[in-house]
Image 1: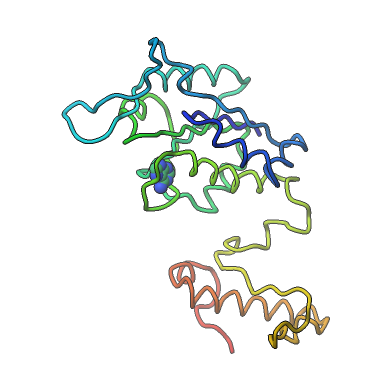
Image 2 (image 1 turned 135 degrees about the vertical axis):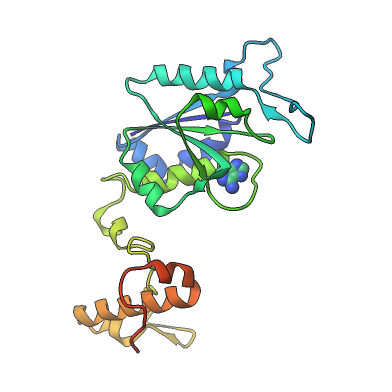
Length: 235
Ligand code: ADE
């Protein structure tokens, strides 16, 4: 997968893309990241990317020219059209199923705004998936874009080893993850449940399913209602 990021702050991405799983995915050749500065696409000598809103009001708005030129120029840099994603608090909520859908694309282009928002003609000019990572206002789309990249890249086949396959984790079946334990068997008086050290795989599986359901019911009743399976928890 090729991921293009259009932003006024490309340096913000370097640490996140250059470490851990996101870096490994690039090293394995499964993804390539391309960072572009929208300011490089301005035509005026002051490299201005924002202006005051028509009609008045607080804050500044991103002007259409550099954003249009950046999107069109970057699109031409690759050999195929990109699925374009606009990070905005007005977008549809980003969920695991959005991440799954995006992980099947060959090319993503993430467009990050800053200031009070985008000139509306930017939305009109392109077929964007508008995405919000939650009902709060961040200072720009950069952190949300990193969230999207992380959630998407780890789903690309081959990025994670078999052992940490995303198939078994939280949200996959609409439930939170069951409790996990590792060594030691007892820590400060707190013990690992016997079933996990019993070696009885069927019982372990059943215990984990019950725990996942019970946790989801207690912590996230909203998810529990939507999850497939019985709506009661066996004791
Ligand atoms: N830009 C500012 N806030 C945002 C949010 N919550 N999600 C996506 N993009 C944003």
